[in-house]
Image (cartoon, rainbow, N blue to C red; front, side, top):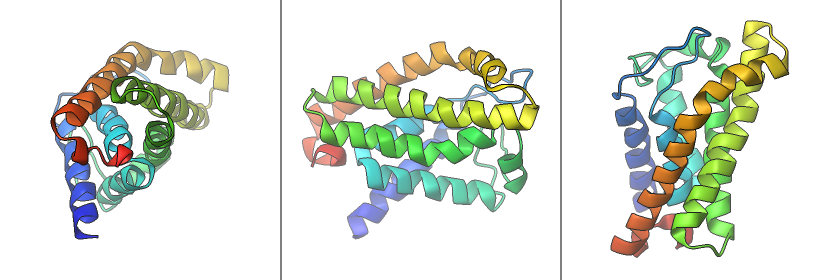
Length: 180
């Protein structure tokens, strides 16, 4: 139990630290950040349940107003703006990435890449684009065109998540909780 709480807290901190990487603001109000890499890693390294819990803890910190999102943002108001769908989708994305990691027999590299793409891109975009559509008053198709601005960077983050997951599996196999 204590070890699980430590892992969850450490990965919550990882998401916060990735928020220190300068964001790129887009005209429609949803920035490009490195924090989605942390969401992917929560799932691929911690597994479905613990990965999602780490992200939920991060969202609690955001909700109570701590400036833990990129650019020092925080507060409940963010859950009503164009980024709301992405925020709400974060724990689901981590859960799905972890589920893919736990259930597949692929190597940690390819399971990590697959989980990050399915959870961290597919699932997250479903939530994020839906949220943008609602917040911006656009059709889902129009919002999906806006959301495609994130795709090149997210593909790179997915590959990086797979490489990091493989490195952990190679150097400290017992630390890859999603495969324990």
